[in-house]
Image (cartoon, rainbow, N blue to C red; front, top):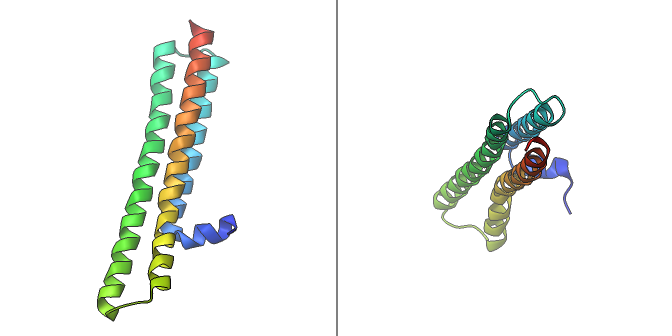
Length: 129
């Protein structure tokens, strides 16, 4: 099993950095707007739920960025194969595995945003209704 640092480098520093930044922003957004609705009650229920949906949208954007990273990686790999004229199956499948790291990270962020949205919106609906 690879360490998180190795996976980060395998996925490419650019896309993995963007995804990590989106992950931090999404979690901070969800926590802030959940707390502002639950503890401080600064906003109405409708506005708090709408703000939480924006957090879920950040997660969806992370998924799209992860897929974009994979497609760019696949394009680069196929360009290399076309230029070289052929590569071994081990090298080809290793490249495919590496290209999936950003997509898996994007999927993880999206699923976590969906889970946070689901839990936070249910708690807010019970508290504020």
